[in-house]
Length: 114
Length: 116
Picture 1 (cartoon, rainbow over the protein chains, first blue to last red):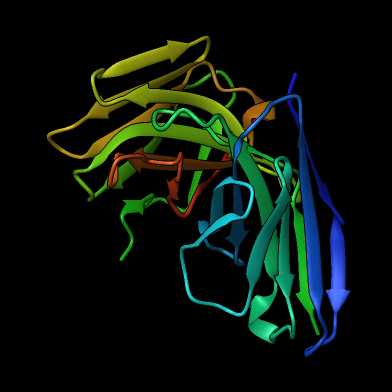
Picture 2: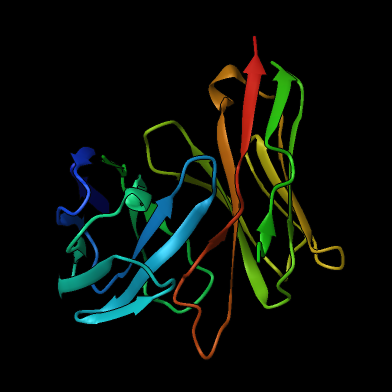
């Protein structure tokens, strides 16, 4: 069966510090990968998605970037964190079959920028 | 522009009764709809989905209804149980430029509380 791992679970970082969140998927090949963010009291907003190694699409302009160095690894990064980057970050995967596909989520990372 | 809206921030229901969670969408390109359940500090868990070619999909206690003309979907939970207490998100995806890539647009969520 497929599993998704995301770490760390919680993170407190000072403004201006770098960020690296990692996500890995097991039990499937060539998945679509996604980074979502849930701000306080809001729904989930898609930040990045990837349909293959090195292929990253950004949904919203922001202070963050994403990379996919391996088929089942997805990394969310920032060179300098802002207070507004605080939130609950979720990695997800789906089958790469084009349409009508569910996304399956990791446990999330609670990021607090102080 | 909120393309998927859940207008009820919260819902309180007695155990054993029906819970009805509602969701509206504006983008006519959406053709696949999903419901997720989320506990605090955890990732959302997929519950049930429906394709636009159907108007109803049932899975145990959970039934999703889709009214395409009204651009409205709802999730019915019967009977409701205290363990159902969580935040429920509806989500939608659609064909865009050759592939949907599984990208989901989420509503804001509805907090369901089921009282014993």
